[in-house]
Figure 1: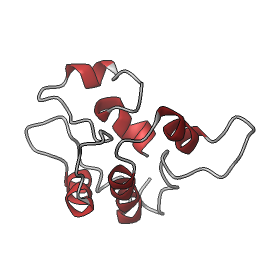
Figure 2: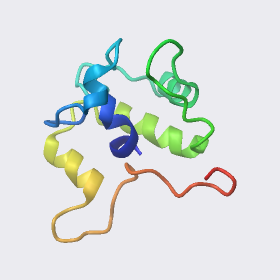
Figure 3: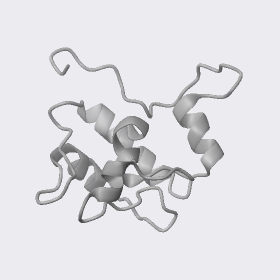
Length: 113
């Protein structure tokens, strides 16, 4: 979910922000920066409810709490992540390893599609 929904505005290692990410004001923080604190409880609330008066949408109606907790845990645990590790987690390795970490988002719960 991070790679498909968050990286556009919050960035990913060695990847430029999307046009949307470059144009929003106030600018979105770089969540994977090594200096970020990213308290999981605060990140969960922010992802679920969004931030008024900013471009940060709420994901509470489109994603399960479990999926939101996974993203909150990821951005807490992977502060300062390298480009190679990020790409491996987001897309798997080049040999076709299917053991991927959930960065693209979970299968929607029934009724949450």
